[in-house]
Length: 163
Image (cartoon, rainbow, N blue to C red; front, side, top):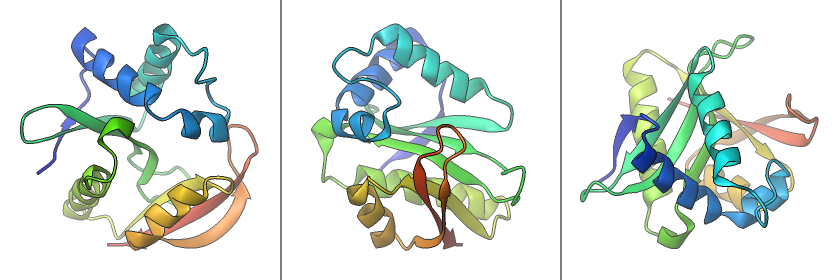
């Protein structure tokens, strides 16, 4: 069973998150946010700190029953336009694939938002990331819009799940 903890970004935790980021080179190639062949720990740490410390955002870390970090999610607690919580990024350790960790992290995030009174959760998936689209659809998310992402103007499906 996965438990969620707010990221502390200690040296040990950053080491685990760095390894998780490095275990997903296909995501970084598709997104263009990092070059997986040359990204440095300092770049990954800066990205993680920026997102974790942004106003209205939170990074949560998923740990397995033995306490190992198996993934993380970056959350926007309340979107400034639509008022819904958003999952900004879900990253699961690629070396631990197909064990259900992603699904368990998402379920824990949904449970949290539901307990806080949210009626839906939204996220964006790049059009080029068909594997992620399928993952989210299996979890009950449906496409509600197609628009450029705010960061780089990349074609992005907005997906939503009613809670």
